[in-house]
Length: 281
Ligand SMILES: [Zn+2]
Image (tube, rainbow, N blue to C red; front, side, top):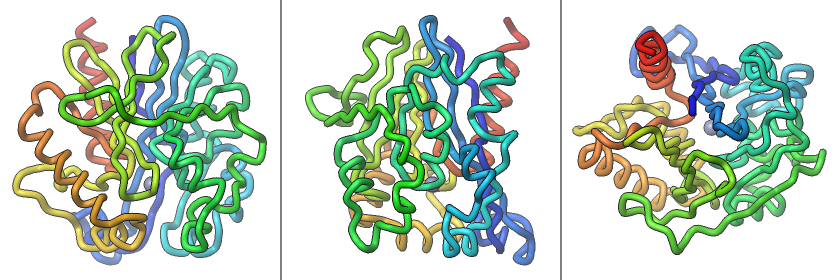
């Protein structure tokens, strides 16, 4: 089993210091779409897809407001499809895609893997297919699922993961993977826990945006704090879940590695770990 940490699309909004917490005010920020390609013994699993080929060909479909605010840079070479091809796989090898939620910067690659099963919390698919007026811009009118994905919906409950409610998924894949609901950013937002050796990797999606939010004492660059509050479907639940993640990191940090979708620091950290591990093999 091997986990590849991919950046499937960059966002470069104005105000690097306010977004990344470092650099200049007039520089553009660097925000990534941290996706995972998990090589199991019996199939390839993607966690998140970032932006896809259609976004690269037609960035206008992402909507004027999002493009103005976030300056996304979807490129063909950074799609999950092109990156797994560079690893020697093809689209048909991707049997399962697990999404933390269906925001436009997380679901863009779905059309590139039309045969894959797409795993999502039931509440998230309900929100995406029947969005409220306020939710409509985040799901961009369903452009990312007009091909009719093979949705597989899950409801959490019954299972338990390190004190969190969870649901084990993909029992036919020889890697232990569970959804750990982290509601707040969207109605059906979830973390994805992946067993790695003796420990766990938890992809937290957009449950937080900067690694310092889950450190003690916590901090968050001001533009990210405002953005998260404005974008939250349930801000109280979002903050409560972020605080639970911080508590998890401090209590069981030797056992669990937390990553979120958009922090370039975490992406570099995990890539450095992976290349050290590969060099040791
Ligand atoms: Zn996002």
